[in-house]
Image (cartoon, rainbow, N blue to C red; front, top):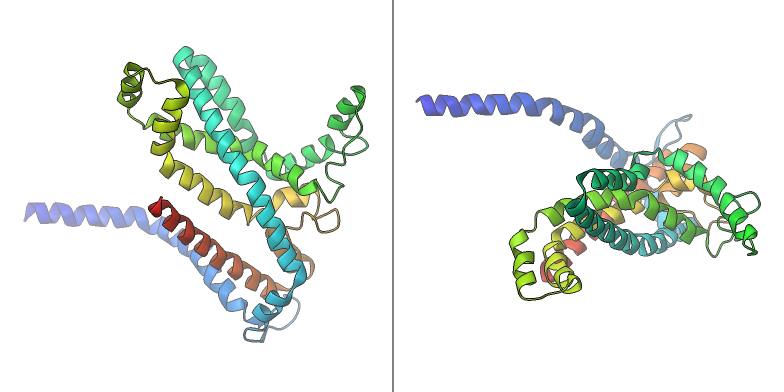
Length: 294
């Protein structure tokens, strides 16, 4: 009886701690999600009355050339920055592990430097990089000019503006994913590397046959979060290019923002959000299946 009473008390305590979190989750995540799905079936301007229009928003969405251009731009943006972020985060984590063996103080300094960009405001980061990469007044072009090289239209050329913004994204997020990679790396038993040392394996072979295979779940998580996060990108686009030049950096998150808050087409923007939600689920399922098969 006492055991059952203790278990029931533990359940009550568990509920007491969970209820506030579940309530916040329901209010700020679940309810807005359900409301957005419902509003996607309305012609909704906050200054006018809501009108039920069924699936017309979705029909319009599939015919919207600007929307599909933003989807294509975001896909290219993802293909540029995600692989580079994964590689850079891995290299950073290996360097951190190496430095940790030499100096505890130095490794803390290196971790701080790597992680610092993640702490900065995204809007402030975008504004700072916009000035650094300015075609006529930017610090980076000024350095190139001092070396006798021509200025580069980092953010004003339709050919390289998207790639430039992707590089800023790599700089911004690599340190964050480095922390995750380091955590996964430290979870690998040291005995594997000691056995490899006995067999005479070099650093590359240990990395290829021990580190990479055992970091597979961590790398899968990093890729998954990166892809989903990229399709929600807004701050950097808003601060650096505002979708320009032309529509070369028009991403899905920015298009959704413009539709909702500039054009005040809340119902149509809700349809965009639902599309991105379903797309994220599909991407997650595909990646999970690919992870299982490999």
